[in-house]
Length: 278
Image (cartoon, rainbow, N blue to C red; front, side, top):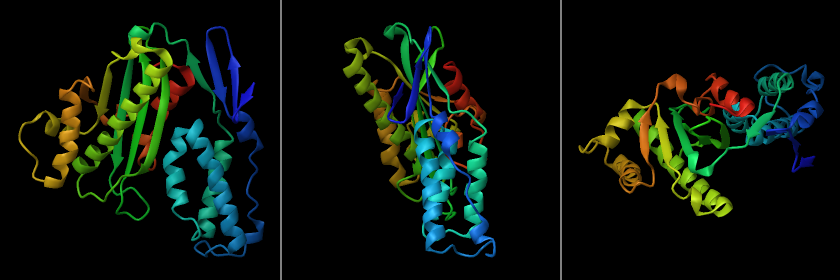
């Protein structure tokens, strides 16, 4: 059946969810009316409206089934009302590429809730926004059965971080603080749904920043006084056992990479979405 734009199919031991009907209905952009424009020429009012509409369709997909499109959406939406012919051609190419891939997601029976854990990944792309000053943060939250390794991606988000930063450490700390808030909120929702049996479910946070990891476990304050507040929030979450652990992982294993910068691989994140396993 179809619900809020998602096709939901119940199989023997899993549920599949997709937006393939929406992707199939996407129409290619007719560029002929703008063929006489130079590449860097601003679009007219009609062209700007077409650009906004096309980018909005990409936004609908990245919010529900295609996290790999998240950074592209942020990048393109920053050009609203000032898009050029080149921007419109970029959107056209992106839509053609989208139509060649599936949006299918697999959700397995997650088993005994006592075996569940929540994993959160946070990353930042320093000065990766189009203005080359602002940075983009990304978060991914996964519900995982630590015995069967069955996994369900519950949440992802990509957005400009709250302030301009001058260091990777500051950006990673801001993204991590946002993630902690997200994953605590998600856990509270799961408790409402499944009861107190999941209240003891551990939360594990992953970062690919060695500087952030070292700063959190160190008792020596960082030089950046403004950053001390964010680090204190992370430390408090760990000391109070709200978060079980903060773990460093290599950059290639960071699932939120594709949410924060252009060209980063989304293969591992999409693999979990498409298979339901880590």
